[in-house]
Length: 146
Image 1 (cartoon, rainbow, N blue to C red):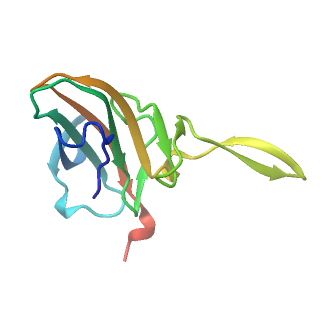
Image 2 (cartoon, rainbow, N blue to C red):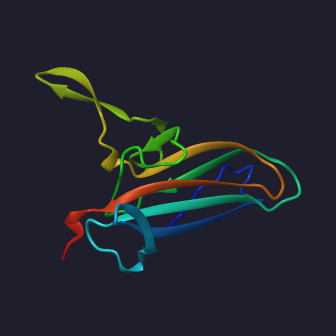
């Protein structure tokens, strides 16, 4: 899985990505390893961005991909991402919108969150030794069942 950083911060900001399976037991959320997940399971991705350098890193941008076969769960990101993308090239404010033709006229509609492939946060400054963590949840698509 690829995580992206702004080129300015690339050398000094280290990224650690983890994934855990989230289940609900007795009304409480529980975490377990995500290595034995199946269609329908909820996975939480956590990306920690840590400034390993001796200088403040400015304009740090966190980008977390939503893997193929996964569907982003709307409003599950923390903090709320400022941008999202369906292709990894073009980012726009959340919620994403697109123009479609209906009865020969262009109509703007909301892109379903399940179609998001990347989420992006503008983290701003990271002091030496400081870190910031972003989180997002995705569900394994039922179409992946074998």
